[in-house]
Image 1 (tube, rainbow, N blue to C red):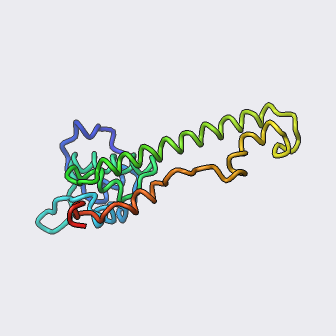
Image 2 (image 1 turned 60 degrees about the horizontal axis):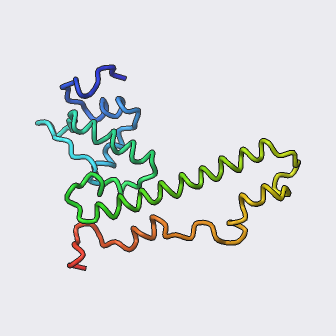
Image 3 (image 1 turned 90 degrees about the vertical axis):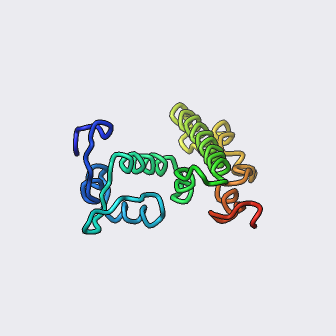
Length: 162
């Protein structure tokens, strides 16, 4: 991988060079282009040419995917003019907070399991408190990100044109 930071590098990369820089397959960049996430310039022979701005978009896509965003959510994130941008981002924050709470719950459950003397951890009365919400059918009762996304209009349509 090139050790020159993108911010200092004034190079133009081919699809193969940019993919290699990020440890991706070239088809991934082409797919992201087809999804409207990337718009590389073309040289005289029609080959894709990526600059520093494209590299930062790829990094943004990668970081966003790692946080659990879908490509559709990322497309809206990268489209500053998308009218539903804030709703998508608020839904993602709600999803992150729910997942972080679930991870915190899991960490506490695991800590208890490490310290518990019960052979069958699921039989331990104190441990059972960690999963009681699931047994009671009360876990995850808020709207999911998928629910919120399904309620929004198609991209390009304003709320008034629905």
